[in-house]
Image 1 (cartoon, rainbow, N blue to C red):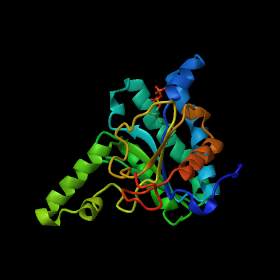
Image 2: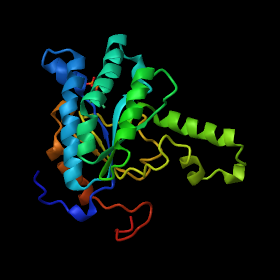
Image 3: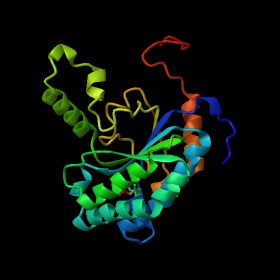
Image 4: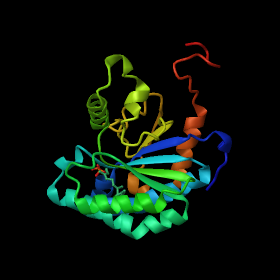
Length: 243
Ligand code: FPP
């Protein structure tokens, strides 16, 4: 990968990706939408390798949203089976690469038990890894995550004055997941689509026209260059022009 122009000492700690455009990629080739998802696998693995090369520590990808249940039944079925087969086929490879696999999303709602079991197996297999945490957002919705966390707080019987950002975060799907520094969305759509709403509060957003199946580590490197060219002030005026 060409690292020219990248300051490897200040790459974003946590990158989140909306892997969009699989359906359009397939349709343009006269293929079924599901073949676009299948082609997304190579994009995902190339991106994981790129993240490892760049020294990114957290990578979170949107694989299935709480809204994706509205898609045709055969596409939903395909995505469930495809996720399962991907875990069976490639968890060991990810493990060998030093990747820790985690999931974010509603586990106890609609997802087939068999898939949950596979997910748990790949979490256990890779739990000791520290190079990169790959979080697969599956049956995930940003609002659902906040609602589920509020339910957790209420169930705990927490008093109103004890409701803090820190207390809420303890009930998120992965309390250890850090805030997102950079969010990338492919396929020329400029939306967040209910992804990591809380965690992107201060993220830089990078949009690219590349459709997900065509995305490679070089595109990730481009997004990092764009990220590094921006100035992050987190609401302050540090080093800025003051505007
Ligand atoms: C969005 O494209 C993509 C999805 C809803 C699924 C993403 C899944 C993968 C990339 C498969 C590989 C990864 C895992 C972990 C299973 P779209 O269908 O909305 O495309 P469109 O906007 O062109 O219709």
